[in-house]
Amino acid sequence: MRRLTPLDGGDWRAVAQAVRERFDVDGPALFLGSSTPPREVTDTTAAVIETSGSTGYPKRVVLSEAALRASADATAHALGGDGQWLLALPASYVAGLQVLVRSHVAGLPVVQVDPGFDVEAFAAASARLDAPRRYTALVPAQLARLVEAPEAAARFDAILVGGQALPAALAARARDVGLRVVRTYGSTETATGCLYDGYPVGGTRTRLVDGVLELAGPTLADGYLGDPELTARAFVEEGGVRWYRTGDRARIHDDGRVEVLGRADNVIVSGGINVSLDRVEAVVREMPGLEQAVVVAASSERWGEVPVVVVARATDAAGSRIADDLLPSIRRLLLERIGPAAQPDRIVVLPELPLLTSGKPDRRALAALAAR
Image 1: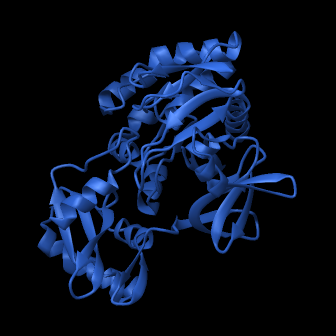
Image 2: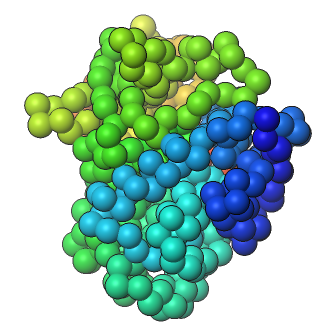
Image 3: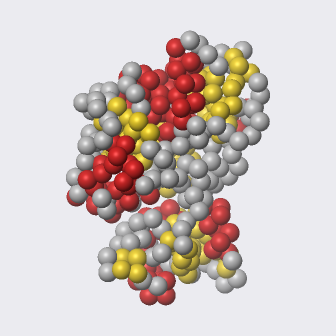
């Protein structure tokens, strides 16, 4: 058995040191989470990460050293070689931890910037990168700040963007201003991104089962700490291959590119019609100024459930717009693109969106706000 050491994910230096000790001298495994973990885990465990619980209760994902290394190697191969990384995400988040792992595997020092994300601080930190190849990993909300000041990220050979769906309009704006964006898909259970711009990396295999994406490969987690039933539901072995059930609906194209369509369980029934909130959100985010909008469900006496759009200071290219002016345009667009049941009941405008520590929107908090 191996000792499990709780760490403060906000102290990235402590996490980086723990990564070095685990990888170089067979030290204790890392625990990144707020709950009280057991003292020991299996010898193969390198890290246990408590997930954010954006759509359910937190889970404690067990990752081996082999999975973390395989993910780091896959990223280096996909991007054309090892490089120096700028850490702009919390180290308690799997994408942040992997920045530290990649840096350690590459033997290059990591540069850190506050995840709170000030563009000027980001630019100053990026100026300290001195390796021939330079990378960083962001969530879409951070990228949205950078497209307004693209010179702050001009030195990067690649900017990985993941953690949540990247709006097509935001991706296009980033590329138009010269940012080298790579859209990633993955989760803690896959040791962060395993699809880059839709294509599998690092030996990742894909398949659809009843329209839901399943993944196999060397980066898969061992399971969930202390929860064999949940592990058995999420991971299944067939023909000697271990598959992870993502819970995401997807389409796999003839060339192998995976198009993720949204959560299989993020569906409401409005007036007897099934409506994917992820699909509604993707359409809403195409509108200028609504790239960071979030769509949640609210109860309705008439329809059962209805979509509600939540935005932070709704704006478009012309400036501020009040919710009442935006709602008719959004409803018309959704009527054309999806159908009448997809039309939102209302828009809720907040000073800012509540976020999880990972940088993702706190959807449960937003749903509670929308209900009020």
